[in-house]
Amino acid sequence: MDEVFKAINDPSRRLLLDELFELDGQTLGELCRHLPEMTRYGVMNHLRVLEEAGLLTTRKEGRTKLHYLNPVPIRLIHDRWITKYAEPRVAAIVDIKARVEGGAQRMRTPDHIYKAYINGSQTEVWDAITNPDKTEQYFYNTRVESDWEAGSSMNYYYAASGELASDGEIIAIDAPNRIEFMFQARWDPELVAEGPAREIWMLAEINGMVELTIELYDTPAGSKTLDDFSQGFPYIVSGLKSLVETGKALPPPY
Image (cartoon, rainbow, N blue to C red; front, side, top):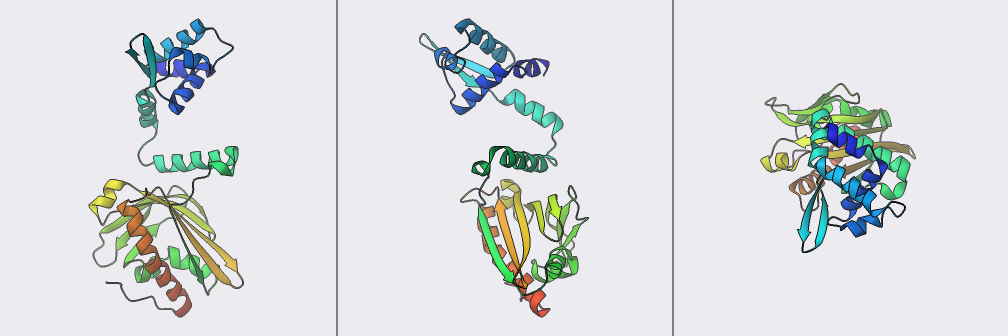
């Protein structure tokens, strides 16, 4: 790791890695064009340091030498200090940083958006989202459990059996306005294999009612997670709406 840190300490070497990230398999001549103020020998020296650190590999095709980015050493650094539990929060923080520093053009778009209008107060809707006695009535018979603080776990348990239905972690929370969290479904092995999704639930009072917006992220097109969630949201939100407005949730869908 000492060699890796030494290699990426130089801005010119970081630039070369950035260029290989954008277009892998470049020749020495192509890479020299990215550092026009530097001699060919200087660029060769930087590439040698990167190769010795394992950050790039080379391949000869005839008399041409091609350079390829090797991200494994950087991934090993990532894995050494970022656990699988912290990774979703780190990713979210990096995403926010990119949005603030890079502008709206770098903002990722949601994979799915669900919006509903509820005739009730924002406090009532927030209570329905965070109160396990109420989630049991509309969230597929599961009870939510959390300390409702950033970094806290956010788990749903089946009311009848106590088995874990899903687990996750709160990334950011601003009660009673917004909550962002990771959600890992546990009821289907395929969903477990696809990994967690990220959800953002936002509440806003509009003309005496509550606008509830749910955004879903990190679910690739065609994934079972995207299909299950996009089909499940209407029942969940409709049940929440019915509970707030009438005191009774909807009957189970099955």
